[in-house]
Length: 201
Image (cartoon, rainbow, N blue to C red; front, side, top):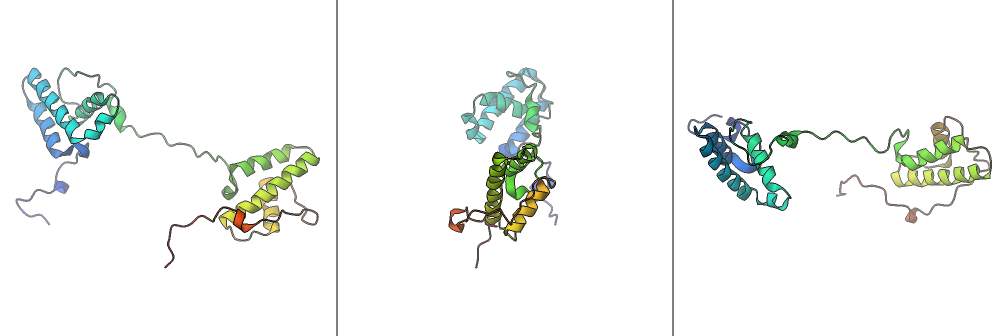
């Protein structure tokens, strides 16, 4: 609905930095039009003081004056012709989007076991037969069973763990359940299952 005489924000030009408000933006737009360069600079200095008052928390940052002048430069759409008291050559860095960070987990085939279990199984694949390898298999298998209990991934029986070990090692490690015995796991000692965030009524 468009009622004559009413001025809605949705009908105005979007603000580049809304935190300073539309009045500051109008002042900057006006400063650009001033014919005298010295007058434009005096106006810019007054605007920067108002910007600092508008967003007082910015004073908590080191080099906040540089930030204010960078913001002024950007809000003027680079059209304010003055002798800038600060170097504004890197002002546009404020609008650079950060590069996405790679996931720290890397390539984990069954993520609920985590990176440590995946690394342990990869190490076991390369180890020669012997007591040390068997002990590492025992520790890893018991950790995997605890992980299944914690995350509640369906079946947590011994066959599930044995099957996952075989899959994650491409068949290099086959857990013989006729001889292998898992540790008794006390459910009270395992971390609570993660909540979905929904409260029961």
